[in-house]
Image: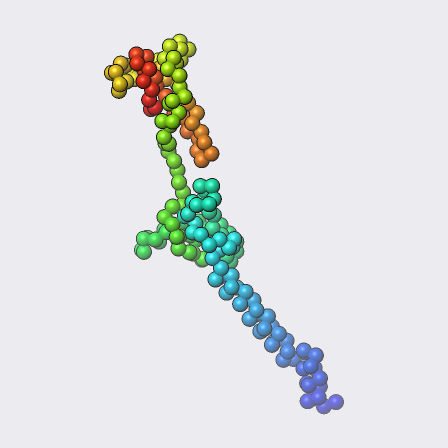
Length: 173
């Protein structure tokens, strides 16, 4: 068998040129899959922005890197004054759609709790009394006070409720 016949025969078995073509084809498929991953909004396929609080029980959405599935963290671009989400493992960043990344409710309205406090609570001798509480209604300085749990699903807060010993006016401090 001559060299030309051997090369033709070996080429048909994938020993010479076909391996390079198969490797190139495999690399092209991997590159296309990588580019498709880059085009995806995020790894979970969520179309809404990370700052939105709708349809998720009031919680913010976590964002993930489409390359390595790591969590994206908020990062400030000071030059452009923009909020970004950035991966800590690779250099992937994306622009945050909403300005909200965290919400901390320090105090909520507890006015609706005051109607549940009975007026006779000011006569309770077991409750502590304050001589420095100024009633806005009658100007009296003595009031009983106690803590009321006003927890709900979103946050847990304690409110200090005062009841005037003179006119039974109630307020929250």
